[in-house]
Length: 405
Ligand SMILES: Cc1ncc(COP(=O)(O)O)c(C=O)c1O
Image (tube, rainbow, N blue to C red; front, side, top):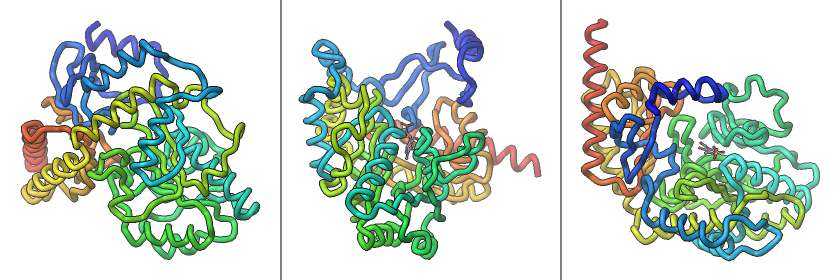
């Protein structure tokens, strides 16, 4: 089928919940994808921070083949060796103690919220239930994750939301201090807000959140669905701050391109779940955990965490130089490692479309911010290619601006 036919069929049969670009992707290899007509694009979206190893990494493909031969599904009624191995890997890397596996970021956050509430109810204070999150955050689309998300545009039409959530402005220390009280059960945040515009949390804010949780004996939850597993140039975003959470959520890059989510917790808080209190039919099945182990092993073996730090520095330096040349178009360049945002003075959507026409895929993060999420194994040549396309989009937009004046 060609792109036009695919778009027509999609429009006829799919729900209208996605605002899609007029592009149908057919194939991917490494940092590149090809559309239905065979046109090649440099992919700096990577399935929104999923394809950290690029497309169809040979180790992941090989693991998929051998895992498919061994066992697809068996249920958590039984012990599953690769699930146990993946839990051992992630707890060792994060310094947390126990893992629960599910299938997506929203589910990982749902489990985190349930675990925090149940732990606090059983072991801290039965009157505590409220989860404090941050304005402009993004935690997913299931009802509790949606309610935790501090952006009213995502809430509209879905009310009533889940009771027991409160939002504070990002990095506002006094607002955080005032928000906590005798009903607070947890504080939940992304160490670097991804979807909300690539906004890092300040060290002071994270330290205060840790301190307040310690004082009240309640869990600090970090949503690292986007920032985790090397994306920021460290295994976890929290390692930039030296502040460890009690509960940590992961998804996106964990399955090397396939769906899996994970909620990690320390032993103290993990007591909140006992047999029968939480579950997922597909969570942590033998197939996906074998594949995820191979993906994590590839990140480790190919030393992609320091590679992400170096690539991020290279890209951010070059983008800052570009910002000096185009002050009318670029308001800010920010990010950590390979999670980079360019805040524009023009709508991000038109920038993304222009870049796509020139063969570079980018994604917005809010109305004015364009996000760059290259694979962690991106090469210098590929970064230069992306930068030259970004520069040519800047050039064409600044010409348009000049003509409009
Ligand atoms: C920080 C964060 N949390 C949660 C989610 C939701 O993940 P999923 O779409 O896998 O449910 C996302 C997705 O973009 C995210 O960026």
